[in-house]
Image 1 (spheres, rainbow, N blue to C red):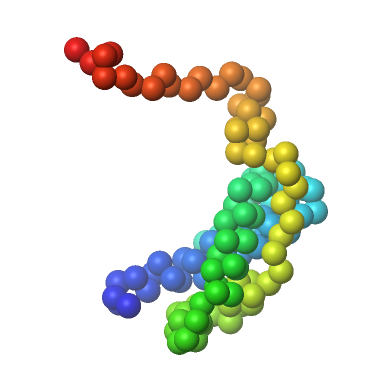
Image 2: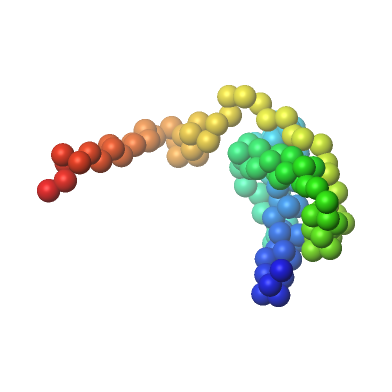
Length: 123
């Protein structure tokens, strides 16, 4: 691994995986917001079921690693991160989708989708 990627793994370990875990717990508990700390700053934001699914995907992929891949990854990430990746899959309730979440966040305003571009529309 290139040495200049060390900061990336440090951010994943200190901020991103702990956030994903906190979000997944909040989603599983049916909470509307998740509280977490990143880079020394406490934050509270709306839960994101999509991000809980992202963590589930990471957990599935970590479990499917073979050979020396898992031990090599364990050398790059602290044990606490490996424990997150080995943790249980979060149940994400159906009916929570990104579009529904976006509508909630912008006050149920109508989302306008762009019209597909057709060749005959070109000048």
